[in-house]
Image 1 (tube, helix red, strand yellow):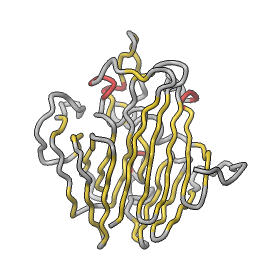
Image 2: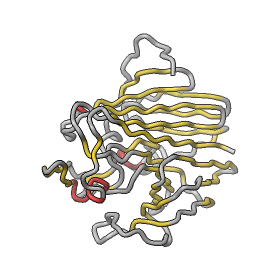
Image 3: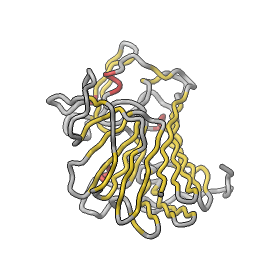
Length: 273
């Protein structure tokens, strides 16, 4: 991505950058968690917006989740022999990471592409440091997203990264996962894996594209992530969330680390047929 502006002015909290290519228009809100605020194809808006009766930062748009996704049980985990506790933001649990309510910086920008960065070392909630990058590119009828988290000078628990799109209610879709993580009484994903039930709010293993239909249009979701959360408990939204690992990963995969300077990446494509 070529840098197109030598100096990029800071954006106001509610200000969006609009990317366009052909029939596709994407609004990005860097100050609101580096999220896609709206996705329009031929004038049809696909995402729940901030004023669609869903107050709260976790309930609209399509935002990056990092350095963990889903619920982290009571915000607690162990790493390298020490106990850590992150602030609860969903009942007693910590959910969806540190990025969705943080202001991201605009590093590079053009008419159809944007690079956002987030300095994790400046967040007092996260003692491990590191950097995050979110690339957003509009290409004909495709929105391409890429996330990267890189450790700084010290190791961190191996991140789980992904996206949480809040699609307007879908009544026709094709989602065929092969297994899921049952939830316990706390609503937290557990092992062992089980055959898929009727989905509501669970994490599934899935290696096939997800197909959506809305207002006469069709959208194919593709990702290199093999974990997908399907959430359908609210009347205005349907969520299909690709992520690189399960919820509560710091506990389910305790001991897995990202070494100093090492990085994890994931990509997500939204393709209009």
